[in-house]
Length: 210
Image (tube, rainbow, N blue to C red; front, side, top):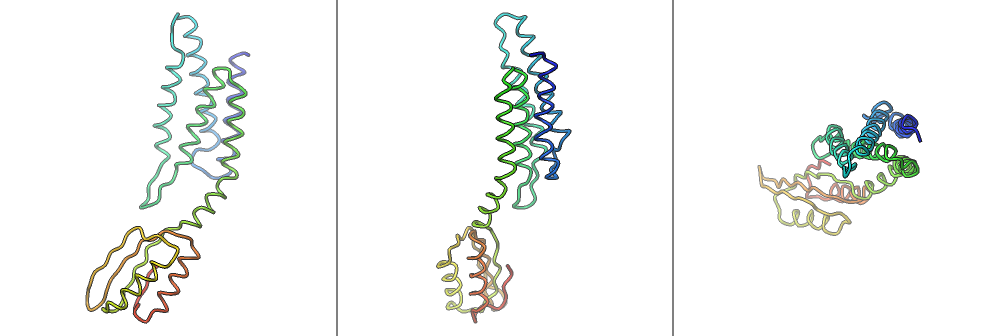
């Protein structure tokens, strides 16, 4: 198949994934994914043709460098805000699109097409699965001010202990005649709401921030 046609196929496959990213309002959209796929394909074609004229040349070396270089591009899409990290899916998509371009450049058109379809399936349907998982393991910090009685503190500990949540971190201090405690927990949203309700019902809890 002519190399120009390979570039056209890379353009189409990159455009399919890029369009999905564009419609999802992601950082790396249509043009970015097209350029990554076409560029990776072009480098692969050039490495193959150069290697054909050099006996014993390793055509995979340039492909490996492509993937390494794309890693730096993907890293630029990753952002961290406090405890939340965003852009990982965008970075992974950039990496996959580059791999698809390499596959097309080396003449593995079917593999590139299948990888494109699988990428679209993951992007279209797996976010719903992510939402379900997040619903089951939400993380929040409970900040509690309670009266200075061991009985009240034990009641608060019991509320968290019997609930279907995992206490990841806990802080406790005495100040101005009160207990100040922070509970960083992970668990289902509904179960955390039950914890809030029980804490608000407690006569020992003066203030709750959730």
